[in-house]
Length: 311
Image (cartoon, rainbow, N blue to C red):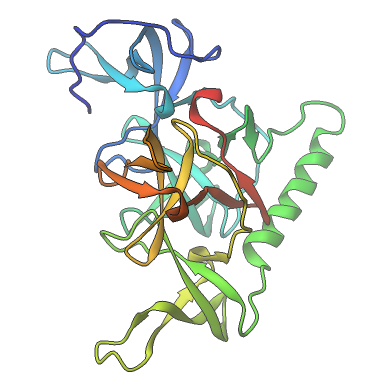
């Protein structure tokens, strides 16, 4: 984990949710921890926009609970437990492993309450019991997306309806020939990026032949074509116009012929920004014209991520 010194001056971040004593989930920004969440308690605030946390399941070299300085943008509230969820192929889930929650995708129902889960960031398949799984959710604009199930008399009905909508989005999404799409990759060095393409042919079994707009074959004569499954394809997001981006706002940056998700780490003059990329631990400069509002394709709708310090 991180090694930030604890001797720096302290000040309270601009957040009313992440207070000392609060139990939170920490999103690590180091290689090998992509897509994971670890339970921790906020010990105290620090400057700028960071806190000291004490992990509940991680220990230091002396076998004492590990303490670490993390940015507020790496925090989210504790996800409440749920009891009424059935998992199916294509569902986004978190599984509990190695003292933390890890994001993956259900690939197969193995029966007897066990499922095969694929971790795209690590190109790995593993088997888990239902008791060690939960539905994956994002914390967006102060709300969980998808929303938490309603614990009332209509809760079961709401749960079933949510399930129907989710299955429609993950298993019945149709991308016809000629459709403009974006494609992601699990290959090392390309994680966290989306690349423009178009559908050439529907192959069946949730697979498509796509042609990239900016990549060509080795001889440079034709645009590269590749077989893509449904888990790595989405429609192109709508264009949202903004006058300027704010500090800690999540954005997509146009870089190396693709859109890479990052966070505004500094606002510069001349409509320029520094963007921090957690997946590579890099900070690069971009002009406003090279950025777009980050959006997630969840449950068949586009969801706009909020500014991190307002979560």
